[in-house]
Image (cartoon, rainbow, N blue to C red; front, top):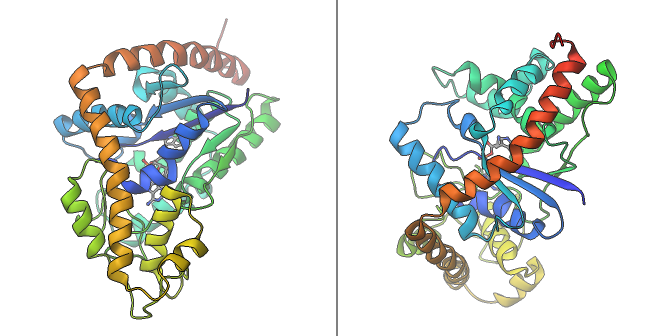
Length: 328
Ligand code: TYM
């Protein structure tokens, strides 16, 4: 069975973008692959988080993994920092990644371009830690949204170089990006990615938002004056984004959605989008409440840690011998 690995960094509440671009697909893959899904809590601290809030977000992230359908009997769910080998292999990968490569990462470049102040060293080197996360488990596939593809490609380049230098040490992973919904855009500014760190809340749907506000956000989503429901991201980014959301959640093709709303207004279409999204979220939220009440999170993480640790321990030992830092 091929191995697959991915993670989410809960620096805030998980969003509909995380769900459509990543989480929802993990659930589909757990039957077909040897799946490892972790909570990237070391990645979270590359920016400051209020510790209390962070703890709550981590817990919610596990609960949402389960609520969205990940089954700890079928896949390994763990907290990144529970497997301490990640940080150590992260440093090794950092030493095998060039400054020039890190400088080219668009997420980092965007932050610099926006003039963000007080950026940490961690935010600059985090793609190397992400390489370690993936290579530790010799993952074959890494399911991610569009914005993380560049990091998986960097991981591949680093692994190939490492193998050339030291002999075959790592499996070379491939990114898996969904055909529809790989980049869900903000509802209020559909030229920007829907993101946890958005300034105003209007453009971002969180999985735990109350459904009334979800409906409100969708009904006030930015559209255009073309007055036709059709997939044209260049000229109709708002409508195309809503179509992607619907298509990802219902498996309807863009043509089917266009036909469905032929001759109808954007109001009708938005109402349909809101119904589809609220239907999906209400099921997730119901399961989330049940999981929180039953307090099963620590058990799930303990089980995941035990399984992941065995692989990580062996891999780190092998790599440390390979590069010559062990004296035994
Ligand atoms: P993060 O937490 O930013 O995002 C988690 C996953 O959600 C996807 N995603 C989106 N997909 C579609 N539309 C959006 N608007 C949207 N926003 C987010 C992301 O592409 C990602 O797949 N560095 C990673 C976490 C990580 C990781 C790893 C992932 C750490 N180590 C190893 C894979 C393998 C991150 O910050 O993702």
